[in-house]
Amino acid sequence: MANHKSALKRIRRNEAVKLRNKVQHKATRNAIKKLKDLSAKKEATKLLPSVVSMLDKLVKNNIIHANKAANLKSKLTKQVSSL
Image (cartoon, rainbow, N blue to C red):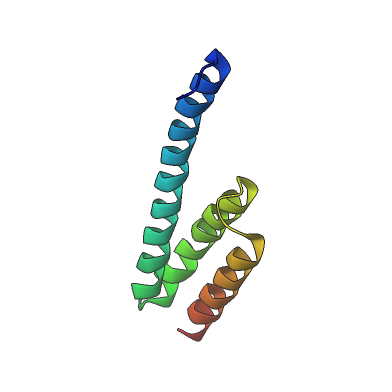
């Protein structure tokens, strides 16, 4: 167990940050699934920028790796354009 005040605070803060990261990551994954399930090009084109923005935010906060986001954006863009 931690003996210092700052260590206890760090433990509490890490839990809060972990929970926030988890929520953001799950929301992005759900948006990606929703985009993949769409069959109408107009709706998919409308949703794509928001999903790309969510991925960029995850990269900025070091929740996912930049290359993973780039791969996902590429695949999603390719899929939307092929509709």
